[in-house]
Length: 427
Image (tube, rainbow, N blue to C red; front, side, top):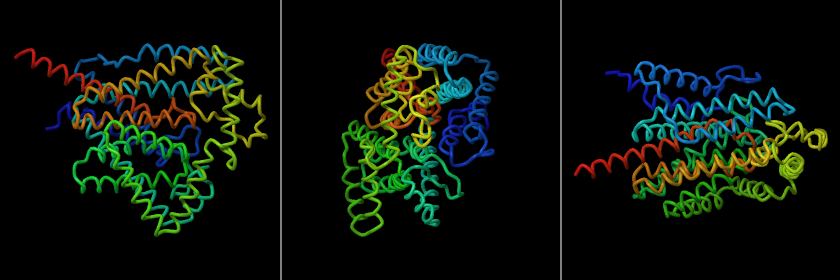
């Protein structure tokens, strides 16, 4: 029988958000070239939010559960609105602020709808299946259309071509795999049988193959740090052995793999050197200029979303090949919101980081809640590393879903501990 609880449970409300976010840049529901293209995620968010409101009204419970970051959010938003009064780009600042606020609301949709470990498990399963479907489709499209692989190889991560002929940011496309990949890696490390490990390893290979072919160095580095976190907490390093064996076999029998390997290594080494790749050179220029901005406006910054405009006053666009967007979220926040904003921003991230660690420590060893806790923490670390090489953290939909899930896990573990204590006290 279809009941209110079944119709409005966490799986029904959160899964469309996560699937829609994973499909961002892959499928558009509206005109792709418009200033505000309609995405599957946007439609899913509106539907999930309205369903949650309807459930609250039907149940007669209008209370919204909170997870403890509200004071941080309030101060950070107040500082952003203050900076909009003097930012050189108010229109974009207001648009990004609206998107940031909407994603904050979404974290509470996630937090208030997932009520059981079973719902959380199904959300994670669907995320993995969706990511595998996208990765398999991407690999198949490249295999069927070798010109796509040739273009992506030639652009070396500058932009990525879809089988439909459109282009999307390869860094964002690759980062969409962080959560499902960390879930699979954690499952691999916790698997007890060889057959199960081999099956999961194949699934990992599908996603890793799709990520490698984006030529997104920032994603490669981020995934590495995330995988290290998983192996540290699981005390299992067999993934390194499996990856090493698979690579040596592929490298020894395939000339294509050999060529791609040297190409990957060249891009990876050049990520900091800036010796042969223009994007790396301009990353360094952006970072140095950000330091100048910070010293010039160290207290309250140049204004939210004002980095690009102020950067042009230091370096005209024609001298930087039109590159002026910040390629690091941390120096961008410091430059735009000053020392005050940067301290609040780091405090927010630190609170989320500590909560994720706490869930790992308090979850039962070997349980799927423990597995999910490790995967969520590793994913968060991956994003922290990723945004050392890119801006846009405040509007990353999957990251905000992740934040909601981190506090959901913490809530479920705390509820279980409380219930267990009540049983003990009643004996």
